[in-house]
Image (cartoon, rainbow, N blue to C red; front, side, top):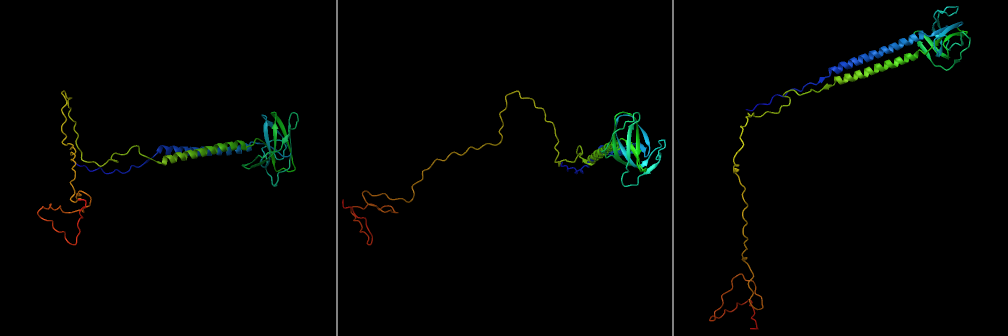
Length: 307
């Protein structure tokens, strides 16, 4: 019995990689938040490093203790606050803000406390800072060869500034900013990549049943064929298939064609020429009957004089 083909199943919907989407979100959030935290830490360290600089007010001599040999930067701080250092300095514990457009003129002297030996102050620095109410511009650099106590004397006609000394506060801050920015950028790129991969539709692993079934025809039941034992005698002659090949017909004998109905007459003996005749020759004349006279107005074959 003929069975109609099953109805075509609708095309399966492609699925999305939920694992990649979740992982991409985690990487993106962790990377951006982690990088932002490192950048914020760099700003906090920058502010703390500026506040931790050693400061010397104008008009007095300040004792500084260097724990290890290194190279330090001396800044002219035009805005800030000097902590209470003790003694009789005028700017001790006071805030200041320089009002001039140019940096104040100042004379600095740094010497070893025990021996009074002055330390050479070098030019050529471009360091600066501006954070949390502190503004400083690099003025000199100094190389401390031996750890110990040193005395810094600051002399100037102006008193609305101070001198600070220490490492460049931007060094550690810039390093942390670079690390934080790299973390945030890497997390954003990787997270976005995994998100895009997860949002892409993936193909189903197998087609549903009946999606690609060809039209069905009449179903013929199958039955196993009986087992035939092997023959024991001589093989039977082959059966006639019911058709045969006809042999080609024998060749026909060649027949010589008969003489044509029109021909040239035989030439008489002797010389001369007889025209063709379409009728059989007349019977020979008898000796008793004379030959008929030739017709008038015609022509006759001449007789041969040699006879």
